Image (cartoon, rainbow, N blue to C red; front, side):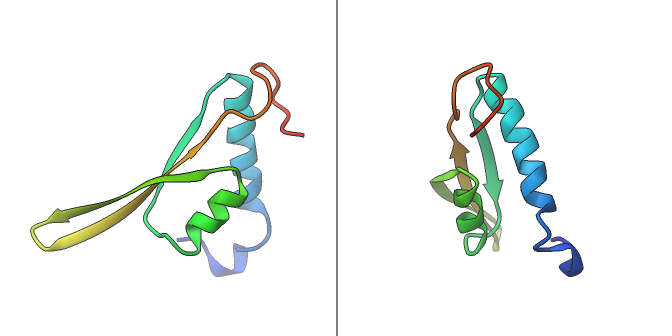
Length: 83
């Protein structure tokens, strides 16, 4: 969980763009798991990810839900720009 006074300043978006631009340049898809559905999934969808599966783990009564998302390659391999 981030610091509330740092949220909404675009820092997370810049970090995501750095990683996804590098992945695009290398011709790779991105995968992430989120422990929260709402609002996390909507935020990640705006960054180009799509939900592929929700999974639930149960360790003797302690339940953990994970949401698996994929971001397909954007643009042409070797081109790190998403514009």
